[in-house]
Amino acid sequence: MAKVELIMPKLGESIIEATILAWNKKVGDKIELDENVLTIATDKVDTDVPSPVAGVLAEILFQEGATVAVGSAIALIETSAGAEVKSSPAVAESSVKTESAPKTEEAKKEALVEVANANFDEASRFYSPLVKSIAKEEGISLVELESISGSGQAGRLTKSDLLAYLKNRGTQTTVKANNTQTTQPNNQTVAVQQFNLPNIDTGGNVEIIEMDRMRKLIAEHMIMSKHVSPHVTSFVEVDVTNMVLWREKIKKPFEAKYGDKITFTPIFIEAVTKAIADYPLINISVRGTEIIRFKDINIGMAAALPSGNLIVPVIKNADTLNLVGLTKKVNDLAQRARAGKLAPDEIKGGTFTLTNVGTFGNVMGTPIINQPQVAIMATGAIRKKPAVLETPQGDVIAIRHMMFLSMSYDHRVVDGALGGSFIRKVGDYLEAFDMNREI
Image (tube, rainbow, N blue to C red):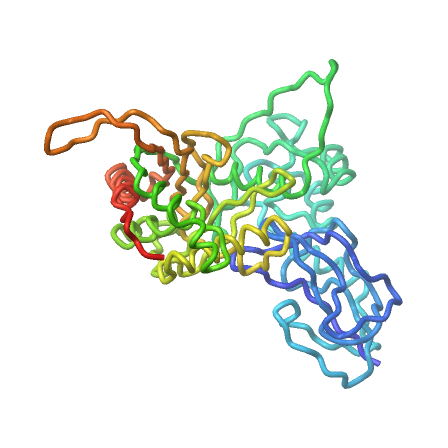
């Protein structure tokens, strides 16, 4: 007999850990090759982890709710000696262990201590030897330790603070101590000025609703983005009359011909990709003092889920698709996003994000940048308004279909000239839409 480690899969470049949502099998259950053993969640997506072998689930190393580092063993599957181990993205580094060398509790503890072996000289506050000892025994990294509020003098973390935190670890919301750091994409760190959360009186007629897992992750991501990037937002008003009339004219023939309904979203994405080709320094990320310019144009499209949360599926190489291809891709991703059927690869790799606040009747918005990108554009509601038109016979007032575009961008690397010129260019492409365009 032999035992195969089931490994926590790597689901994206920036993902270093995942949370176990549910075990679909229990110890002693028979498992077929490629059968789903458990469901995990990252800040991007929920997904199932299949078994690399057929066998019996011998040991579960982490329980539901545990957050585990990518590449760590999460279970042992007992199988016949010499059995073929399938290589897959979920278990690409699986290894076979003999029954004579099981993973002991002592080995697990040593692994936790190794993870928590931090350099306390770099800490922002003093930690007593007892606190450091408890932190190492419990596998608490320095980053996590720094996030725990302390009740001692000058915010010092006491033994009582740490034990209280451990009692509710994984469910407790903490306030970071002063002068801590936050981690941004690509494992960079940036100094953050911290603050105490305001007290809320819950003694009256209130209902307390616990955030679900995805909402907690969204909240953390939004706070991180504001800490990382100095946000600036620019606005332009656009006359999209030609675009609206063209879509009204062709939407039924389009659906009859291609089997898909055409919305405004693929038209917006097409205009964005054209503008990115004109201003490629919008299609970048920042790593320290380096600017990384992406040659692929991958457009994320924010999609609302039935739960009220948001997810951002990505259209890879959007500039290589025509309007029909964009329409099919937009509809497919939106439908599968709402059904929770997106693959991990379909929500990573975005280089620019588009969000449609007009869906909710909003005329404009100030969206938060989807890190590690440097810009996000919001499209507002299209409304009929009186506007001045220039004609050979002079200026006239006409009823036109108007909308606002708004774009938030990272002022570290995108100045007002670039940001303003880019959003204006997107507007120019929309205003110049050809009403005689063939489908």
